[in-house]
Image (cartoon, rainbow, N blue to C red):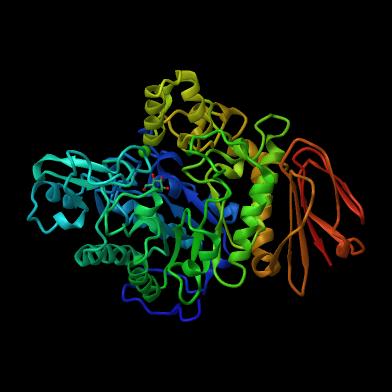
Length: 566
Ligand code: NOJ
Ligand code: CA
């Protein structure tokens, strides 16, 4: 980032910030869902001290920074994505002092910390909202979005991403307020300069605490369509609405001034617009997450749409090309909103779990961008197979289930959808050991431990050199130590094999070929003609790699191999 003021002095000598320019471009991120990582005080809920206790684990894994999902004070309707006080730590996670310790200890290990920042909405328990909903004359009233009803109903046809109308009636003022997510998550009114100022100050508060960056939740939604008229498509109401750039630019000036990195959740923006968001000079953030490779043209997010590998490779390639000249992508296959990658991209079958976790991992990891790993992904954790709606905690899954039942689905069918796609799959406790409660807690955990913990856990993967965990450690080392894999060009290799994703990373120094089979079929992959006569080394492989010669590579089910050409 050209004009980035990386080296600056800070008044507070306690604040430590490493000054290496653009560190995220050659780093690997690790996403922590605090509630499910490690419970240090035995109340069944993961906490900040639990994370501090596992810094050695993160260090040994080799990650450069942690993205911490929200730990702010919150009623927890959406597990912290409903913030009641932006400057405090929720007591269930510990104290501000615990957070200071975590930041200090991470930094002592040269690991940076990126905080989740929810700018689009607050909790309905935030002081601002509590006052806003009581009194139309409160200065906080206009911090939210209010409209009068129309014809005895909602102000317009805008819908919530969590289902139903986006408008909730408020008797005290005889108005409706807008919520893109749950009704307990009222959207903030970014048109109001006072609100914007408050949010800027909150960001500065955390920067002064010494955090290194922010993951920007729901950031494409800050601006709403100001006509408030009916729309044909829900995205037209609040997704990337012209004028949003004013808000984003103001925010960017703050990040740049203090030299913090940002990664935005930028769903449903086409690759052609990528540069607008992440251009190193003019963009609004440093990295973006796109979601095209994890949404399969579904009618809704719980759809059982069949995943098509040709579609996945095309979508990923479109983004690689879009961000090729400038800008940087955050690469991922898992997060706290998605099912587990092995269950989704790979195979849970015991014979294939290890291989397919590695194949899916290698497939995205060596693309151009900053790889993110979601806790447990590095073990090849799989979906939990829930059998009852009583096991479900996620607000969105519960809402979907109730909707299905209302529409006449039988309970088994409704449960089936949630079991496959629901967000709880990513939120079951991190599996540390084969012991009681997977070593996550000493008491009943807030969400059930997934049944797979006896076979899939850190302790056993530490011991096996062939484990998914050790494969991830190797991928991290390789990517971080190779300039071609960081900055080299990306090229998709054409193949008629529908289950293979093969691409090349190259520059004048070296050429790498990443060959992954995302199926349980066997394939012979003929090497590209221009490489066929060149010697290569097998740098990393899984058990599905059979053999290779100068003309072809043979892959068994879920085979994956990383080749380096001299
Ligand atoms: C995106 C977050 O990743 C998700 O978990 C949350 O429910 C919504 N934004 C609302 O904040
Ligand atoms: Ca705890």
